[in-house]
Amino acid sequence: MEVQLKLGNRYFRTYSHRNPENYRELKNRGIAFAVATTLQQITASYEPSTELRTFRGVTTGKRNSVFKPCGNNEEWLFDGDLEEVMQNKGMSIRIEKSDSTFFLVEAIGVLNQNWHTSSGEENFSKIFTVKDVGRIDPISTGNCAG
Image 1 (cartoon, helix red, strand yellow):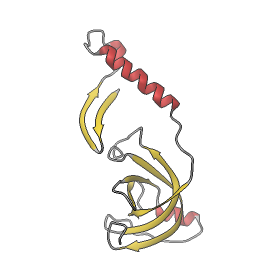
Image 2 (cartoon, helix red, strand yellow):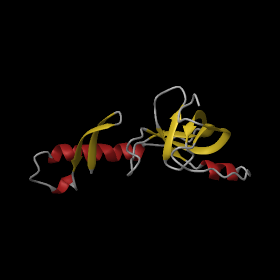
Image 3 (cartoon, one colour):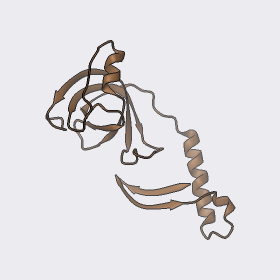
């Protein structure tokens, strides 16, 4: 079990415990075990959203890149691939995937809290899983003003 104390996108401390119930000599064994039990209960009862919503924002279009929704300063994990989504709509489109190519998109998808982070996802509080794109415009900068 790894517990990370986090405020916003900043990490303050990480606690690692392997099988806290096995560490009889561990001074904080009871606390570590209680945290592990609570996290297991949360994980078991968490149901991710399936509600499709539309968001307008900026992305490079690459899978697992940043999605910056217009109107706030958040950055979400962009779980999708613009080229793939457009091809699924029957539109043959080639998108140059680089960190300097940006698109202003109106995307339809599912937004969930990032409860279970994997390597590379820890800086994102939310994951936007893209299902469809209503509009896509190339822009010169990485912000909604274009």
